[in-house]
Image 1 (cartoon, one colour):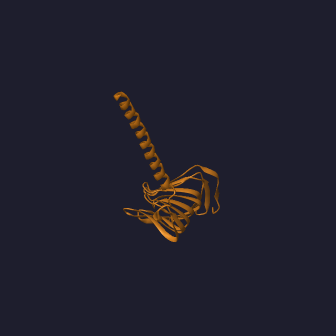
Image 2 (image 1 turned 135 degrees about the vertical axis):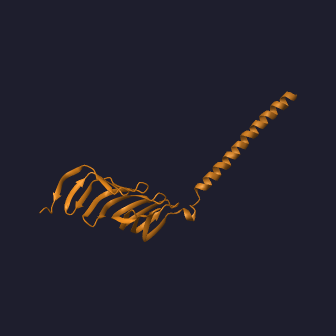
Image 3 (image 1 turned 90 degrees about the horizontal axis):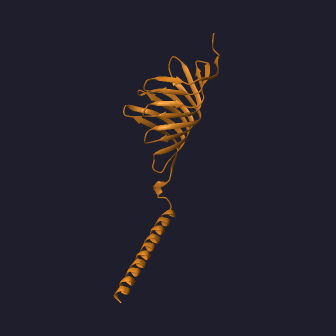
Length: 191
């Protein structure tokens, strides 16, 4: 009867569609899984460099520069992990303002921002005063030209030492702000 042929064709087409979708799904899964087993492309591996110089720039000139022992960059080059930072200089209005050394930096090479940790030593380049800051965490924000020392900071200003909760230095304005003092001040050189 014609009705049985039409119903049989409909069932046959439905089964064919299900089998076809199943095959497409199996092929798609196979292609996806095959991609998981492939080794990364040669350019997709981190690059490690020993002993070099790195710098960040602004339109008006250098923003920061430092020597390092080792640097490892991400495969896309947007992030660098730097160890053994020394001879670092942060610039203010194109002139050296702060000397920096740190154990480790994480640098965003797109924005020229960085964060530092480990022992960090800063020397403010001021011909009138010998001022150093020592801490273990810092963040440089290139867009706003600010350096934030977010952990306890020991400030030595011509022999007078004080420990403060944190310090923020605004390189554009040439100002700095220290958090609450922790403990007593050592005025070792009072005469």
